[in-house]
Length: 333
Image 1 (cartoon, rainbow, N blue to C red):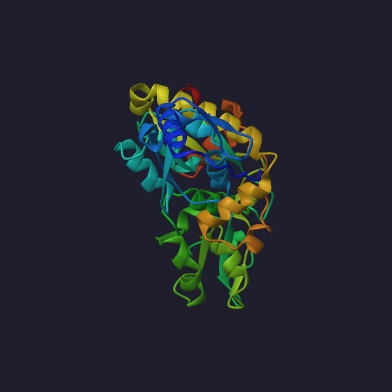
Image 2 (tube, rainbow, N blue to C red; image 1 turned 60 degrees about the horizontal axis):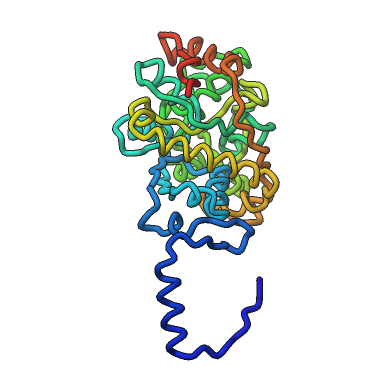
């Protein structure tokens, strides 16, 4: 940080100086991080708000870092992020026009597309990561459940019946030779699932961070494993930022500016993962120490239609969709 030198300025000169500074609305400012932004564009009254509904995850720290670096303000934008507990709820709110953008897993978005909603991918963000870094399936420590097939017919807690967590679990059971159609899904907020499993109200429950790390400290619980990698290959598309065709047309300039700001954000954040992790930990309520144990893979927004092949196949085979998902249109920008 630069040290400020103090000078004695005559009152008349000071008044004139203040007048000049007040009228200099287009002056450039430095936020202290090396990022320069137009002062007029940075004024909160002149920034256009982008409303984002999001399932809180560590990866959302990228957006916070982008705001801190001034990339969004430089485009005349500020982000209003509303946390929500399930992807299906976020997609419904997006379709209703409550959000401009939605960040969630692909499963609820593609189910909506198959159902006739015209959603578009704005930015791809996330892939299935290494085992242990996507989700966990909790059972009681003394549970007889020891493999995915053992979940047949069991009562399982998840944040929504058609959340990606459920798709992962069903795919894992199928890959293990079981029948995933027999599951009894009990929708619960993610922060209540571990307790319900420990109390025997559920046979099992699927959670993500920060609840997975918290559950690992409980002697009453055992983690059966990561359902994502049990049913899908590492690198399979997992989540992204979406918008509706209606919003894309009505606010095309906003979406374009958002993409430009996010591209700068990724360039910076991929080289400063610790900053991303720290900001993401605040969003999900995770301690810095716990956050450091979680892997954050570098983000690449590149994704192709063929990358979704196994995912779309699973949606069809598991009975989530009855019509084809138009991935090409979903990816068109």
